[in-house]
Image (tube, rainbow over all chains, first blue to last red; front, side, top):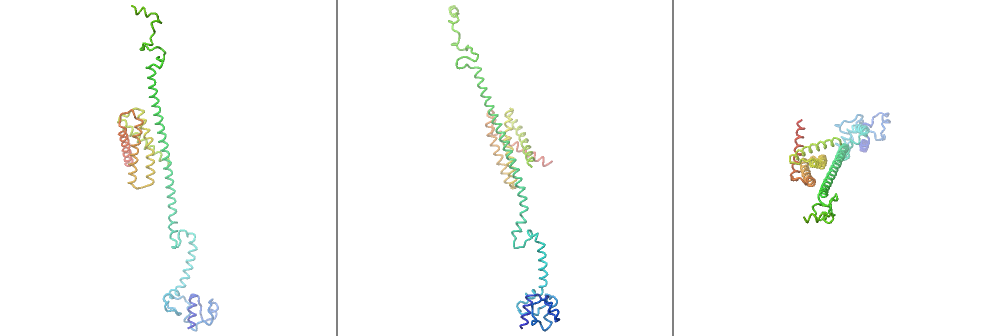
Length: 209
Length: 121
C-alpha cells in the first residue's frame, strides 16, 4: 500500500519513461531518479520501460476517479514533452514575427497591427489629395479676386469717362460765371454784353436815321 | 497633380466662356465692354465653383449629396452673376436675372454635351 502510494507520487513527478526500474543494479544507479531503494518494486510488472500507449491502463492507479485524466497524462506525457520542446523551439523562431502572430489573448493588438499600415498609407494619400485641392481652391480664389479687381477698374474708368464727357459738354456750350466763354469774347446772345453806342460813337447816327 | 487639375479648370473655364458669350450674343449683349464683363463674371465664379465641387467629390461618394451640392452651387452662381450684371450692365435693357439664368444654363448643358462626347470617344 505504501509502495503503491510512493509509485504514484513518483509517476506524478517524473514520467514513466524516465523511470528505469530495471532489476539490474547498473540501471538503478543511472536511472537518475530520486526514489530510494526501498521503493523499488519487487516485481517487474509496474516497471514501464517502454513509453506507455494511451490505451494501456496504468498500474499505479491509486486514484480511481482520475483514471481518464491519468491515462491522458501518463500516456501522453512523453508526447507532451516532445510537443513542449517543439513548441518552445517554434516560439523561438516565431519571436521576430510576434507583432503579427501574437497569441489569442491579445486580439486587439493583432487587429490594430493588421489595420494600421493600410490606413496610414490611405490617410497619407487622402491628405495629399486634400492639400492639392485646397491649393487649387486658393488659386481659383486668386483668379476670382483678380477678375473682381479688373471689374472695379473698368467700372471706375467708365464712370470717369462719363464724368469727363459731361464736363466737356458743359465747357464747350455754356458760359462761365463771369458771363464770358473760354475765348473771353462777349456772348452775342446776351444784350448786356454788347458794345454800348456811347463807346463806339456810332449809336446816335444809326438810331436817328 | 496640381497641374492636371489646373488644366482641367482652365478647360472648363474656356468652355463656359465660349458658351456664355454665344448665349449673350443671342441676347443682344454685343458691345466689347459688355462681353468683357461676361468673361470676367465667369472668371470670378467658374474656377471657385469647380474647385469647391472637386473638394466635395473627394470627401463624399454619395450621389445624392453630390447632386444637391451641384444644384446649390449653380443657384449661387446664378445669383452672383445676376448681381454682377446688375452693376456692370446698367445701361443695357436686358433683364439681368434672365441673362444670368440663360447664360449659366447654356454653359451647364454645354458641359454635359462635351462630357458625353468625351465618353463616347
